[in-house]
Amino acid sequence: MAVYECLSEISNKIIANKDFLTELDREIGDSDHGINLSRGFTAVLEKVSKDEQDMGVSLKKAGMTLLSTVGGASGPLYGTAFMEAAKVLTGKTELNAQDFLAALDAAIAGIQKRGKAVKGEKTMLDAIIPARDAYAEKINAGADLIAGLEAAVKAANDGVEYTKTIIATKGRASYLGERSIGHQDPGATSSTLTLEAILDYLKNK
Amino acid sequence: MKKLINQVDSIVDEMLNGMVDAYPNYVKRLAGLEVLVRANAPQPKVALVSGGGSGHEPAHGGYVGKGMLDGAVAGAVFTSPTPDQVYEAIKAVDGGKGVLLVIKNYTGDVMNFEMAADMAADDGIKVEKVVVADDVAVENSTWTTGRRGIAGTIFVHKIAGAAAEAGADLADVKRVAEKVIANVRSMGMAIDACTVPAAGKPSFELADDEIEIGIGIHGEPGTHREKISSVNEISDKLLAKIFAENIYNSGDEVAVMVNGMGGTPLMELLVANKHVKEVLASKNIKVAKTLVGNYMTSLDMAGFSITLLKLDDELKKLLNAPADTPAFVQF
Image (cartoon, rainbow over all chains, first blue to last red; front, top):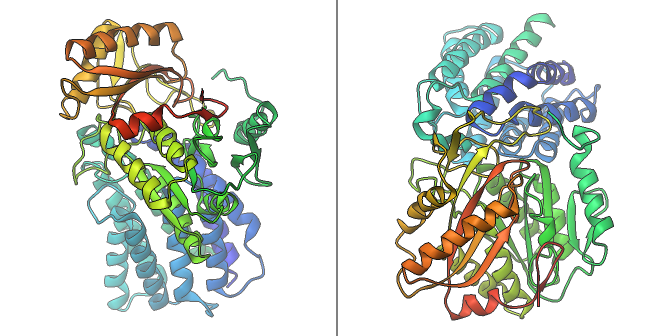
């Protein structure tokens, strides 16, 4: 598959949700999440080769582009996630269910190492760790990539809802203490959109 | 939103070029990058690099010059610069004696500057970092991301910069910077929010008679809201949080900064400063140096912060050393 098309689906989804993500960040952060990610994913659309077949090569390019264009905390976190996933998928041209799990694991490990966060701190991890677990359970029971991702997206959305109920202890929202309750985490939201875009791409290709 | 801008996307680029146009004797811009360095960088001394999101002018480019910073990296508005930009700044200013990164404690800034430090270390450049966390509005516990770095950062630039200019080695410049960080505390408030150009609307909304206490410098909401009171009463509240740190005691000598957030008349800052000095006098704390003005702003936010720095002989001498930068000149 041309990885570009999948990255393009992700980029377009993030760009389409620019104002929504920024508004979420305005509530509990500093009003720039959608703006920064849109800038980064717009650059991804320009920098990643349309013809590259190696998923690792394209994801690495996407990661480095995000790292050098997004800034803030999201830049290193999204950049690291894509670059770590790239290491797992280097040399591969077709995505299978087990490889995607390995890529997710690598991305999550990278985010945790860079962000020094764990689940339950009102961050992107509250969407993607449950998504990873739901995905693993599905495919280990014999489901295919798409069925696994459907479960992952559902778990990620549940994770976003969960972030409304907890106090932020990482990132700028942590300054608000209890005032962060009731608001969904922008990073959890954007990472859920990313998973949704991958699912949309796989369903429509 | 009313702003004196051309295009939202070109603000930082145009501002940096405007800085170079205004202060060609002080700063030059690294080609293709959002980095200002001393016009005569590198220097044969330990170099200081700071930076962060834009919107805090004159921080940080305004402090590039003799006796303060060697390089300043400007991110998008309120957004930490990326590692590649910081890395280029480090390479450009390193004169062989090493580079100290002065980072304000925000999740993004710490991550991006640390990645840049790793990249520079791979090139064999000696890099050390200090993280400024002077904002007492934020509880310093394992349950938050830690205190923010705000206006107190200027004292770190000034004092560590003076040490570097005087020929101290990297370890010593870092030691002095850490000493400032240990002894500086700030607390701020807003009577009106700021508007991030790309967002187009105020970062929070306050009623006509409301103020926000404990704000940072990125338009993020503060710790709580209350009805507006006199500037003396507001100053008392900010000072109470700072004094609760138990750093500033009778007989001490301090430096004071009454810092405007960008949209506050100097008249009001001076009124606040008058009261701060009275309160300090009543506690038998001597003011050795006072800075009043817009040193670390938050775009067009109306409000101010108070910073106290406890001085010893070493810090006092370095604070009073000459400096010559676009935004801070001292003979």
